[in-house]
Image 1 (cartoon, rainbow, N blue to C red):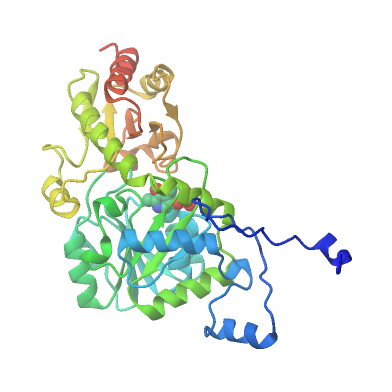
Image 2 (cartoon, rainbow, N blue to C red):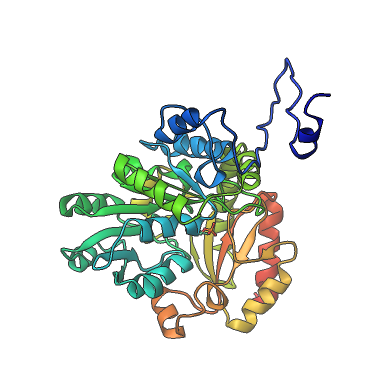
Length: 395
Ligand SMILES: *Cc1c(COP(=O)(O)O)cnc(C)c1O
């Protein structure tokens, strides 16, 4: 009964067990107690492995980071962040300074584009948005002060494929960092470090965690000093993830490869099915023969064409409204990578800030939809699209 008062305000230690839990324990502790100042000193200096304060790191984040490192074959252990955008921000804000210039793909994730267009210029960092499939345009946009080129391998939502090989050669030649956001393609389709990327970014929120109940990101750099700079910046800026979110994400990631393979196979089926429907004007899927970057997709993605399909209804906004109403059982929601199929309509969501002319230039009409294919039965899913396209277009 010694120390009874203390025990009221301090949790008790877990009971001993000769057997181990098969699920990773959740460690929500914000602080970690050390035995002595000497030990704490050695922990801060790196001589002793141990946690101190959860913003600086915690076991559940490290478990997710290690899994991501393995998936991406990362040269150094990367950092898990509170969201994919935190990872994007860590790179764009943590590795640049006033006077630098940053080139971004012209069809990046909406918020990444927004940071390029609104936030970096405010801080004195110039930006250019260029088609990452056009290597000569990128070359022409390079300046002596260009610090990095940020791209996604497959663009959103028109699913064009970047010239990753050409970009890697160009960036190396010009000593510019090549940053690849690998969220859409995932390490199952491509590992950007293998193709010469300097930094890889993920939104784990999407396919990797896969259940739309966690927001999480990841970033890793090839160069040890840059990798460390990213880690320090994310700690200072408070981009750390919650232990519970890491715990949930790990659980989701255990089934990632199965979900990827299944949704990809269904996506290929759905793309071919959509192309047979009269009310559909155009289908975009990197694995189809009619894809404008088909050869590049085949080389970079080695047969893994992923779970995203885009298509264009033969109709206007009214047809688009009728389509989502009729697509019973599918969520019309601005996300991707969920276990269920989701529909996104760029003209009313991700690309609403663009003028209709600008959208048309990028190939997005009011009838344009992006589909993130989920785990539904493929036949049942194709039938839902057949019915909804017929309801929307009369075909
Ligand atoms: C969703 C997404 C992000 C942002 O990730 P969040 O986890 O939503 O912050 C970044 N890049 C791409 C390609 C995405 O799809």
